[in-house]
Length: 184
Image 1 (cartoon, rainbow, N blue to C red):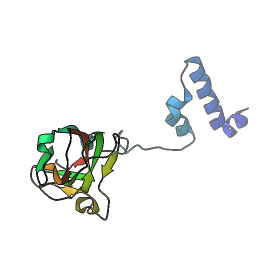
Image 2: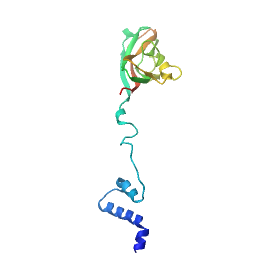
Image 3: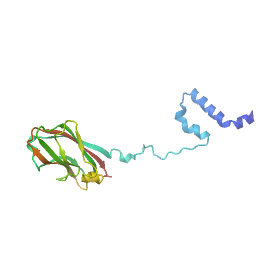
Image 4: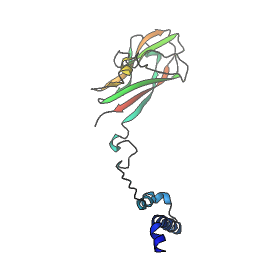
């Protein structure tokens, strides 16, 4: 009998563990490391309990979203309308425009960027159907091609009107900037 116990001790220990767990209604999954310890396997957790993202980086990447209404009085060629504020240390990777209420005029286009530059989208139409999404294209728009723009100082993302032909009514759209906050 002693020889049998010595030969099958690991199996017997696991059987005893299963019996103890069933008596006390403990799940074997909840003591998985304990079960493997009998077999000589060691697991070391160096993740710090995080799911691949350092705790101090939580909420560092976010969409900055704002609904914009541009009244007819502001739809003037070459004028600039500031859309959203950008903070120093923010990396803006992309800017999307989603039409809510398009213009009913003949044509209305704007460059989306900072100051008068079309860094995020050039000649974007504000006449598209509701729900239409526009955004800059890699290889075409400067900030998108370079992987975004890191702002050294506070700034704004703007719409600079390019073509305004027979404007009619307010234009409503959502502007969504994909932001990475690089501030410590």
